[in-house]
Image 1 (cartoon, rainbow, N blue to C red):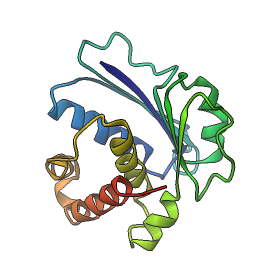
Image 2: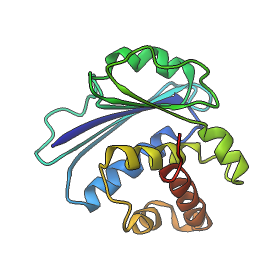
Image 3: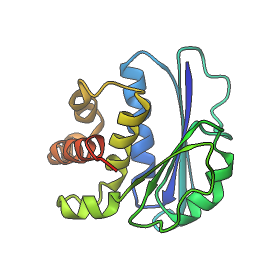
Image 4: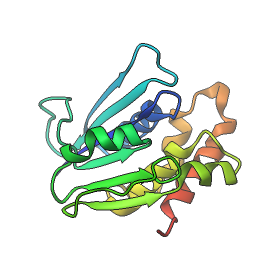
Length: 178
């Protein structure tokens, strides 16, 4: 089984960290993994995207042209990648920042007010992990068991206070009912 995921938004929204989290969790679960970040030269505030491929077989190319899963953290990302998502795929939208609905009826669309949820939970920079939590729940790509182990290994040692906050965000997304 192969799942191609594209995460896209503005620089500073944690797009690359979210992709790195998925890739690292894939490695922990013995998947073949590709992680390909892409961002504009201005980085914070510019466009950023990250392709992650998780597979049971070796990954031939790291490029995600037609994602099975799209996580759109802003309107330009939804506008740009919605039509590239495969039929039968899933699109996760941060509905705090994106006011429009997905225009297709051949994909599953999920609207999560991730930015507002992050602000309300006191973790304003972790909308990315709320969206990842919801994506994990809806796609079943990973079990939620042992998620904390992956977070602990991925968060740098000097920022270990963020482990609990990342787990709070993942759980909020995982448990969100839309």
